[in-house]
Length: 238
Image (cartoon, rainbow, N blue to C red; front, side, top):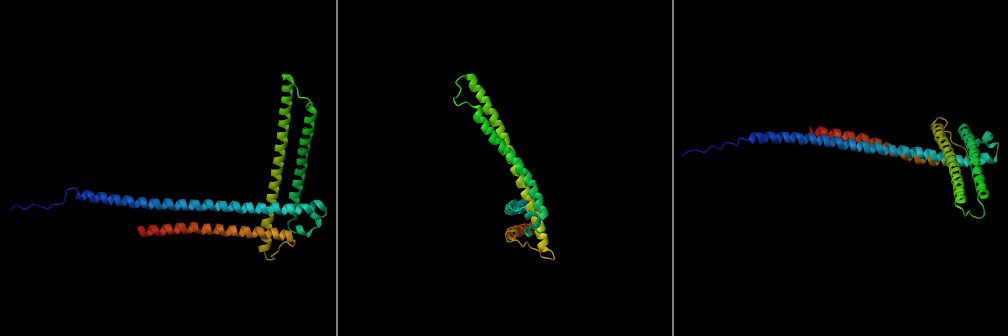
């Protein structure tokens, strides 16, 4: 009887090679995917950290607006407040700078407001009690109206710009004052404002910012853990 050989198919070795190659490609693809995932996670955490930093900056600026608005009332009512008041201990320089700058801006804003009043009065005089019936008269009044509107828009824009600049000054006052008060509180003397209202606003700001700093630190830790976890996974899969 003739024996039939049981030889493996000629392409079996090729299949094995293809499987091995595909496995290597797949494994490498998984590693690349893991790295991309970690990069994405870190980018997300860093973006969240930037948002926290913005919230911290905004809180310091809000502290400045609130503190300045509470102090400026006393400065306007009492001429000696800026020079003699213990309320301004250690922060007098910051407040005086902001107060003088904003006082000059208030004068500029008052001029723009006065100009708006004058334009309104001029409009009343410029237009007759009885509307013009001729086309020429209507066109003339239309040109006057456009001119008044243009001037009013310019004045209002100037007022808005001045008010924004005043707000910027208050915010800078808050950032500078907060930094100084923190340094004084954390120093050897452990100094805190003696004025009850100043102390209240400062304590509120420091508590809020402290919570935000904790949140930021948690994200910093998360970033380091994401990298560590990824490295451990890669070692296990190698």
